[in-house]
Length: 311
Image 1 (cartoon, rainbow, N blue to C red):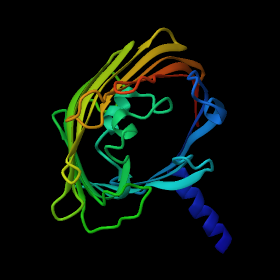
Image 2: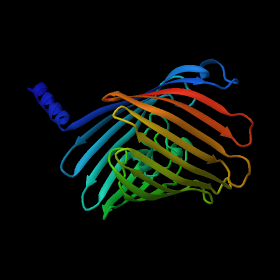
Image 3: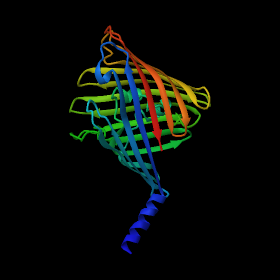
Image 4: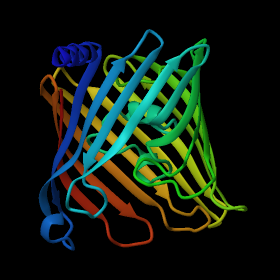
């Protein structure tokens, strides 16, 4: 009897749940003469996300997500808990737990191809993509807001201080242009003290547009660290064009300045590629990447084939 009750309970949970997975792989050939070994020519496994979503009631839902992949220079695989998020749609929309941040999630959708490359703010570590805390969000007259108070350490590190990060996002228009047509215009801001006198601030402005063929987006981001007396800057543009049912072209341009007070230190990163969709749930993307460094006479060119599989 006890075993039957457990089976019935598990069946009810699964019946109300959505389970999916997403995996990224790639092949890389570095055209630079200075590169040798595995960095010259290699296949690699980038990420696998497993996501479980459950509707507990009409107003309450839960999302659980793991992130498995290569972290930093470690050749092995590491697993992290990326989301353990409870959402309550009451008088206010409240989120609790380990949850997605609001600093570049909309821009990531405007770009639309996380399996090829991270969005610029994620790539340059202006903010973690997930963190532990509490959030309040809402939408009125096509204007949405999202306020978060989080640890500030992200989902890959333990919290080490009493200071907390406050971040807020305002978006007019559609927030998921990779799934629907429309426009968006938005801003995001975060404030994180890390000592009595020192803070990190991030200010971002972005926009996007999508129709049945074309999707474009751009952004301008600043990261200000008063302790280091340093301001980083990103100017980025990305676009894709649907050629037919199976092919779409894409471009990604990321101009990064690690310190705006210094001259001749811009880093320009460009991707030009083609997505091929042979069947549902699978994308193959051959592309070429170029890195240009303003203060160094060394430029990089990399040929890549990125793969995305989802179920």
